[in-house]
Image (cartoon, rainbow, N blue to C red; front, top):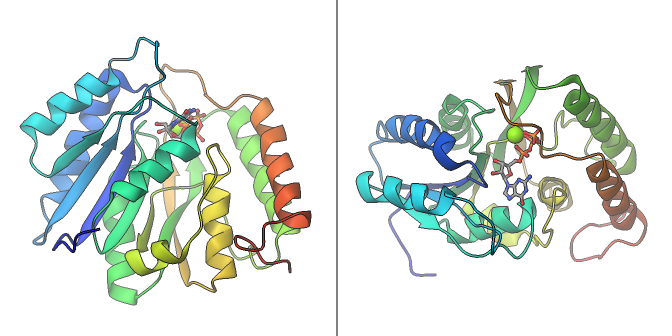
Length: 245
Ligand SMILES: Nc1nc2c(ncn2[C@@H]2O[C@H](COP(=O)(O)OP(=O)(O)OP(=O)(O)O)[C@@H](O)[C@H]2O)c(=O)[nH]1
Ligand SMILES: [Mg+2]
């Protein structure tokens, strides 16, 4: 990648958000505009071929009217993990990050996480959800998942919420990581890389908003998917990604 003077890039996962992405991007853009250095927003608007999804065109319109905004809009070749990897690959900053675009995480958390990583020289700063306004079904899945994760992977005990975002890291830390997941396991893979590489992580509490009108995308099958990946990683792991405890 060509050297740039961009200090901070953050990828926003916009999957199927359509119009709902507009206020989120506008609000984050306002916050980022307070920064005195170069930054960029990467809107990840990948779409399933053949589906009716206006997200790519809505994101393009945003990029035309807001400076420092770029769009990725390719046919999807994987689920959330694939989008997140594509978004992070596109980030050119010295600090790179990712956040969901569905408005559940407050845009202000990007500012807090970035301020913390800059001031205290952490390798990765993320949030953990202290107050959750999503469904009890989603809270239960998260609680069980984090409990299992701590039991499967020693070294993860001090981390409170594997899947919470934003996740902001230094480019050096990101470059050392091996990320391959195309699905929900990407957040876990990222954290396992941090543990394996002995990176310094800091977590900031955040309030997690409700989903509004849409139903959760997380199906019961996701639980089995997580379990399968955790077992693979723990017992048949690929040594380039996760060292056995
Ligand atoms: N479900 C899903 N989300 C995707 C995909 N690709 C990217 N994403 C993004 O992943 C982010 C997180 O997905 P969410 O479904 O909101 O995950 P969550 O907040 O844990 O769960 P719910 O909000 O309850 O569905 C969203 O901002 C989506 O934009 C995909 O293929 N499927
Ligand atoms: Mg969500």
